[in-house]
Image 1 (tube, rainbow, N blue to C red):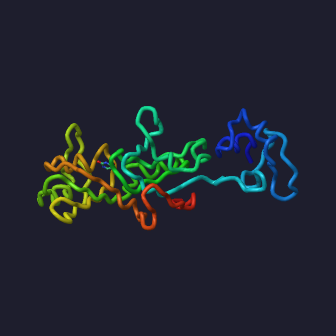
Image 2: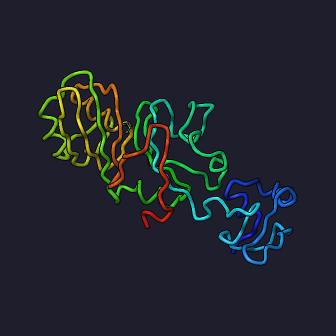
Image 3: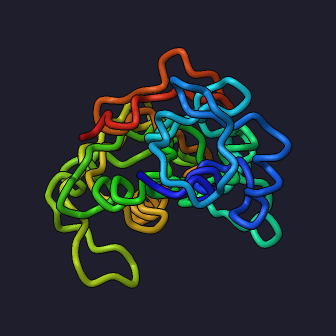
Length: 233
Ligand code: URA
């Protein structure tokens, strides 16, 4: 049970200070007897609350697989970094607290699979180095990829510029001279671009195809598919 104003604010309906006015403007009731709730401090179960006859929007949390187009950032500050992936979500989701955020990040110029969620603990769990979720990338490079890179990446000895610890073993499959699939189980800054740059290859396009077992089948660029909030529990 939580205070009604806390519930409404956390799910993006209004701020806590606006909750009183929200109750005046909308029929906020409990399932069952249906009497209008008038007191913002009343303790209720989010699953029992109806707003204008409708259940609350995702009271147990949001978890989506988004197909990120290149050109959008995963950061939340549009003034500093430009348009972000959250602009593709329904407006009310963007007002939630905790806010919907990405599980790890993709660069602005990278497209593909990114998970978005407001379940903070899940973000920490899935991005923790302990978890080693395999992520599959497809990279297009400006010059042919040397075949020695396959063994080097697999060896777990490649140390990137400016770093001290080697990258974890990664699987590189050269699909054609300028295209490769790379499977990483960690997420260092610009990791795919930097690993390929270490082999003299500039990445000109990068797309994440998979995160663990999840892929983008049926999810057009710029759209998302919802997962049950407890999908990873
Ligand atoms: N590696 C990169 O270089 N960029 C990404 O966006 C993800 C992995």
